[in-house]
Length: 233
Image 1: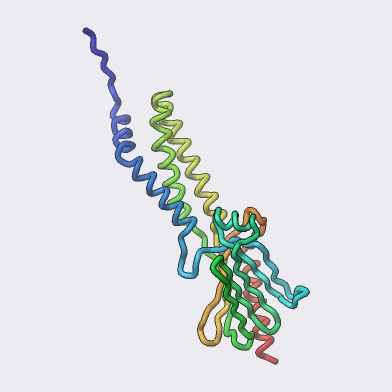
Image 2 (image 1 turned 90 degrees about the vertical axis):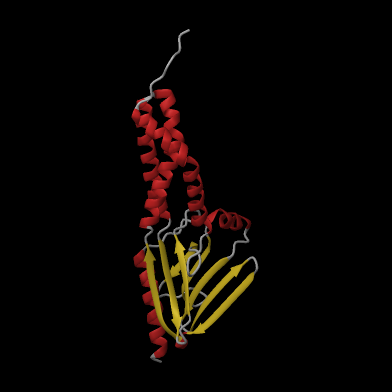
C-alpha cells in the first residue's frame, strides 16, 4: 500500500496557526469596532450629519445670521430622514438671541438665550487619525483571515502573496474612507453662567453638505461679532 504524504512549508504552518487561533477574535473585534462607530457616544454625544448650513453677515428672511441643522448619523438616522421623521439638532443665531433646539423620538428641547447672556463662542475640529489606522488594520486582518487560506488552496504561495496585497489595499481604502467621512467639526457657545451648548457634525454624503474648518471658524467668529455688537449697545 502506498501512502501519499504532503509537506507543508514552515511559512504555511505559521500562517494556518495564526488563522486558526485569531479568525474568530478578529471577527468579533471588527464587529465591535463597527458597533462603536455607529452607536458610540462621546462626552457631548455622537456627531451629527449636516442637513443644512447657513452662516453669513446678511441674515435670512427670519432674521438669523447663523442656522446649522444636523441629524443623527448612521443607517437608522438615514432611514428616519427618508421617512421625514428624523430627529434634528439646530443652532440658530440672530442679532438678539441664540436658539439651541434638539429633538428625538421621545420629545424636544428648546433653549433660547439672549446674546447679552452669552460670554463666548468656540469652534474646533477633530481628525480621526488613530481610529482610521485601527479600522484599516482590523479590516485588512479580517480580509486576510478569510482570503489568504482560500487563495492558498487555489493558487498556492502566489495566492498567499495575492491575498496579502489584497488585504493591504482593502485596509488602506477603508481607512481612507473612514478618515474622510468622520472628520468632525464643533461649534457652540458658552453662557455667562458657564453652561456650554454645542453642535458637532460630520460631512453628509446623502444631503451633500460639507463644511471645512475655515467655514466653521467663520461661523464662530460671526457669532462672537454678534455677541460683541449686542453688548456694545
